[in-house]
Length: 225
Image (cartoon, rainbow, N blue to C red; front, top):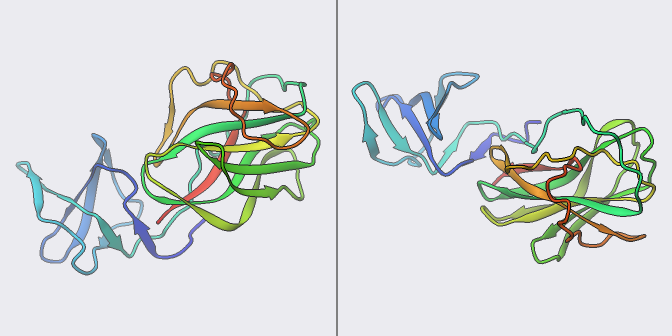
């Protein structure tokens, strides 16, 4: 979803090639992978670019701290993946994922994948790593598959710090894949480290990690500052 026409730096190492006369962006390299913009050329506006920091025989690279004229697009850890595991019946339980972002930004809501047996109500929560509740929302108009609900106000988060996104499953049969997090999952600018959970009739900070490799398919809606 396009929010507005401003975009902040999404990852730490981004190098843009642009024409120094017209400032038309031609292409960029990110994390040693070559990326071509979906729409080109883009324009860099104003003085928010830096002097060259590296050169090769055919291009110049610049580190860009801010730029204008790009759509600011929301992102999540997962898109519309379908869990492969059998829904787990134990309940009531708070199911969560520990995650971080590569740039300062905002969390505007919570997502989770819902099996048809996973009846509500469901409450989504965002916590800092110390267990402080930052925002909560109650899911409405649920169907089967991916659900999402927005907070009343987007919550600012800080680059590199861990947060926990969770939802409370009152009646069990939550989506579940075993041994998913044998390594962290990256979908820049977001990264998921492992899952967490806690049992209880009401929402509580999910701090149990004995099944950290499992994926409970909890997600966030994020956009950069």
